[in-house]
Image (cartoon, one colour):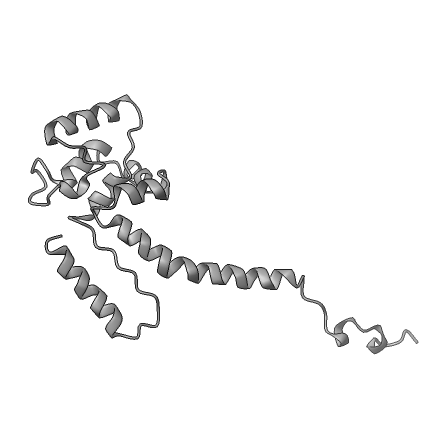
Amino acid sequence: MDKEAERRQGLEQARQDCAWPFEVLLGVAHPMRECWVLAGFVAEGKREEASLVALRKELGFDPTTRSHELDASSKTAKKSPKRVLDHLTGGEDEREARCWTKPDLGHLRQRGKGNGLAAFLGEIEVRLVPIFADAVIGEDAGAALGPPQPSAQEGDDTTAPSGS
C-alpha cells in the first residue's frame, strides 16, 4: 500500500469521528495482504524448503521475514508478493490457509512488524478480545449460579390438585 502512514491516519480519523454501533478494527497490509500470508509461511517438507532457499537467493532476502520489502508493481515482477506467495504455496488455497492457522501469534507478530500484520493483531487484542472476554465472564457468572430453578408455583406440591 502506497502512503501507508497517511492512509492509516485517515482511517483512524474516520473511526474516531463517528459513533459506530460496533467496534471498528483497522488492518492496513503493506504492501498487500499476501505479505501477511507470507509472514505465516513455514516450509513444510523439502520441496518447500528448496523453494524458499531459491527465493532467498533470487531476492537477496527472506520474503517470509521481510515481506514488507516486496513491492506490488506487477504480478510477474521479481519482488511481487503475489508471485512469491504463489511460488511458495503452489497456488493452493489450503496451503495458504495453513500460513494463517498453524503459526502461533508470537510468530505472526514478529514477522508482521513491517507489513501491518502485527498492528492488526494488536487491534484485535485491544478492541475485540475484551468484548469476547466480557461475554465469557457473563456466561461464567450465570453458570456459577447453577441450572435454573423452578418457580415456587412450578415446584410447589401444595398447588397440585388432589387425587380425590
